[in-house]
Length: 116
Image 1 (cartoon, rainbow, N blue to C red):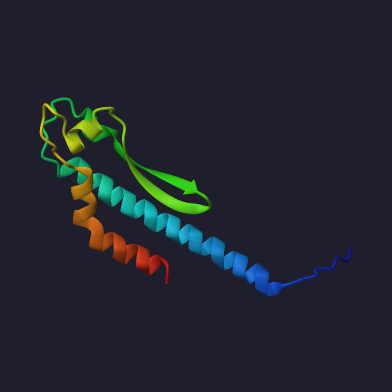
Image 2 (image 1 turned 90 degrees about the horizontal axis):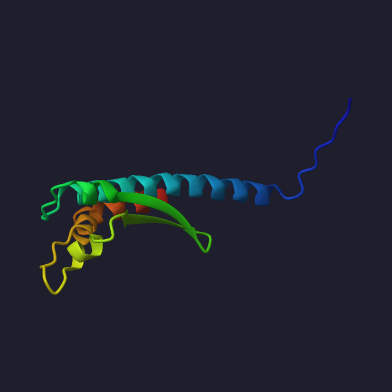
């Protein structure tokens, strides 16, 4: 049995493989950063939550938007924005923005390393 393999443009194939490896590596680093920030938001908040439902609803979600990888930190309880930003009846007790601010340097370092 004979067969023939023709590599038309090896540079394109190599570039495509490098892009896939880079996207996989970036995806892994985004996931790490998402877990870091969401974990911090769950454990370093100032609000009192007797049920734990709000903390348990905080999670990361990977998204592909216009062919770009994004990592979202999501709060699954409808009242999460009321706690974060406050209402006319209760003061804000931010937990998402402080979580990102507390981990900003680590996120920047990790993602910068992934993009090298």
